[in-house]
Image (tube, rainbow, N blue to C red; front, side, top):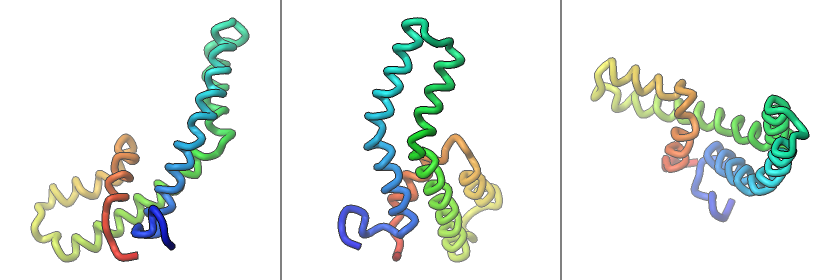
Length: 125
């Protein structure tokens, strides 16, 4: 493969492409969500209905689910890469540090941030 993401591992590439597709379509989603907000502002729906419609706008595109699926695969791959590195360098870390490294993959609030770091990881495809 040539191009922008040719240097990435296939798992990294899949996440990068899904992330970019979500960003590309975000403009359309924002437009639809603006229309939904206008309905709320004009009293055509309740706040609960507004919240549900906003969620539906995201879900109907299906892109966030595709991105999240690609992110999950990327995190699994990152955990595998870390395990391989720890076989060689693990003796340099304390048991507490090793446990902390393992836990970071399970922190839901840090998933996207970790995904961005894994995109910068250079490995052989």
